[in-house]
Length: 236
Image 1 (cartoon, rainbow, N blue to C red):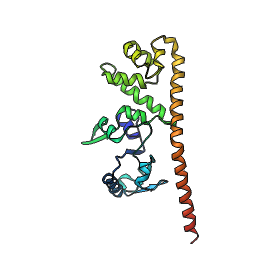
Image 2: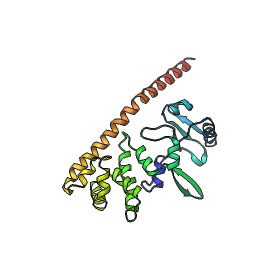
Image 3: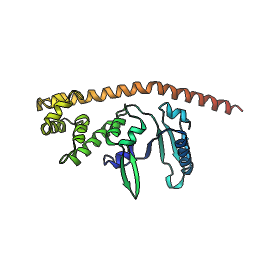
Image 4: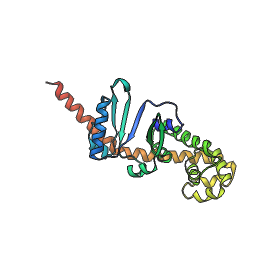
């Protein structure tokens, strides 16, 4: 669901880690533990490997020591902001075939939504993901792709181009993305669209900050508890 998925969609050239969305249940958690054992993977930082933290929306981070995956970092989550249940994600997944293996990743729309965070590095990636899909499919697009582009493109020029080709869809989707009204009125509105796109981004960043505030407090509490525990051990 992270950088590796972006590589498969053609929007990135390199990723140092693997991000996984895990359907949490007892059986699946046991499978995760077995896989981590095979990779000789240890938990890094906090929280520790405990299913309750996945259910609270925290990520658990691992570092592999197996020679074939030495240094590889794996991040696992079960619940994310802006993202549907695992069952819904699974039904919409994209499957890539790689070296005779099927690799299941978030659908493009779900991946884009997962990248709408407070992190600076995620927003250029969103733009690349959507534009790669646009340039690869604009000659013979599906209705679903056209709707997706209208709702997610972050370039005023491409939004104008799309509106000129599909004006009725642009009008229809204004209620979902108000800045589209600017694309159907006047090409002189380029600056206004750029400002509106930035406002969209700022709003998503604000929502992500609010979402993570209680989770960060939880992490700080876990860190404080671990440090106190380590201090007590060091005294003996």
